[in-house]
Length: 311
Ligand code: UDP
Ligand code: MG
Image: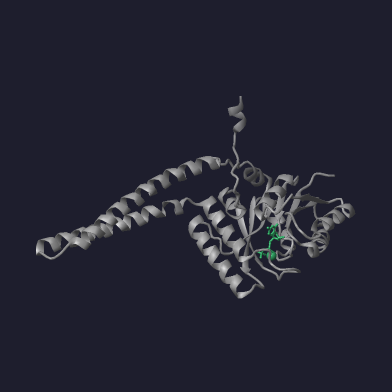
């Protein structure tokens, strides 16, 4: 095949009704526009998703498929797609057509004009049940405060230049959080707004318990703050102990019984020191955690006059 300029990565988990639909939409849209490939990553689907992917791959040479041995989650599917991609840039899109494929052309044009990371930002979360909406909003609020990245309207619908793809793939850490990491890497970034469409078929693949697991996983991979929360509690306990010591002394001086306050003061003092101590351990654990993630210290966007240094 000719040199591919755009790889479209489509993670799919139990999406048998949507494979043909999204392939048709993408092919109609991209044909004659650029040289492209569509990479489906079947994230261990239990329905006929893989059969549909194989069928499409047979009928269309631009379609490829990767099938996981079990459900590893959307993040893993995205990274598998990125490492398979041959394009000069790649776009990640949901298979349920909630991400309007037409936006790809707009993103592609921005990429041609020099942008390297083009993020699609939601203007609306579309059709979702009340509870799911509350869960999702709460989840993104917590995530944003821990990761320091605006997660509320962020989506995985992004176009990345080859440089950005290689930067992401160069990170050896196990727990990849695509949405946050693709912002973390930097590069020339711009944002495009899009309206979340209704799901074409099937239901959201995120159960509430999966969402909570996703949140905990990603907070842990992007923030060491919870490890140090215990220091804060230790501090409060020590302050309480000081108050109880003062009350005990006052009671002692005024001649009334100070027994209860002395016991409380002792408990809070010991508890406070233990918690602060654990907080210190947490601090070092966080350093070790940062270390084993082995993220690069920096990423170089470009160099000028670099050939002089080579001589
Ligand atoms: N997905 C996946 N693995 C999973 C869950 C979801 O590959 O374990 C895919 C799914 O097939 C879809 C995309 O990720 O293409 C978004 O999933 P979904 O529509 O369920 O999420 P929502 O739109 O509700 O955030
Ligand atoms: Mg969806």
